[in-house]
Image (cartoon, rainbow, N blue to C red):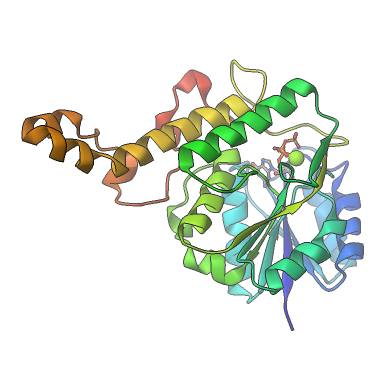
Length: 291
Ligand SMILES: Nc1nc2c(ncn2[C@@H]2O[C@H](COP(=O)(O)OP(=O)(O)OP(=O)(O)O)[C@@H](O)[C@H]2O)c(=O)[nH]1
Ligand SMILES: [Mg+2]
């Protein structure tokens, strides 16, 4: 029998967590739920403990302090892989992701998809509660990332996903260093680059009903400039790494030296997918402060 787990990272989600977990349990009663809380100051951890005490399908992993969404998911993945779950889900606690989609997403994963992305930006997908500006920013950030990374995925930043455990096992999770949206982009892109099957399942995304977004962007009003910026840096390095040979062979050795890309930290670490957007690439004034 397939074993499923839904990982819900939380930071200050005391207003929405109970409802999200309740809807999840109702939608996929067999699945287990893991809440990964970073000592939320608003008492989300206590809400999570009460939910776990009342339901043997709910678990809580408490972390000492806010360490970022990416690390929360990596801890959740480790928990799930250690315990032998087959399908491992990422889902927000804030009500944006409708657990009613999970049965269909599980079905698609069980029938061959290595990664199912709950996608806003495919036919049949939609977003409610966003201003036209925010919609534009998210849409164009995704288009930009898709073009720069030469990806076929329309919603690279989506945080509603089902991975087969084999997919996560095949990725170099220890090498994943990015946070926030970049974490999502990095994982999706790594899966795609590994030649695995990624399918996008259209979802209806709703703006969070309560609480506060954990995505902040110093000096800017929204999160997508962060996405675009970081992906831009990532993509520039990626493309630079892919292109030097052609140029240097055309122009001779000295031109080749001049044109050769500066070795990026990522290249120095010798990794193809890791460090999609390490903070070192982002000017301090424009860093994403999700972590
Ligand atoms: N454990 C943990 N969870 C986090 C952290 N940052 C964000 N989260 C959770 O990750 C999920 C996604 O974060 P959100 O703030 O909703 O980000 P978003 O969905 O991009 O932004 P919204 O549009 O405001 O919903 C939510 O369930 C958050 O509570 C963190 O540092 N640690
Ligand atoms: Mg959210």
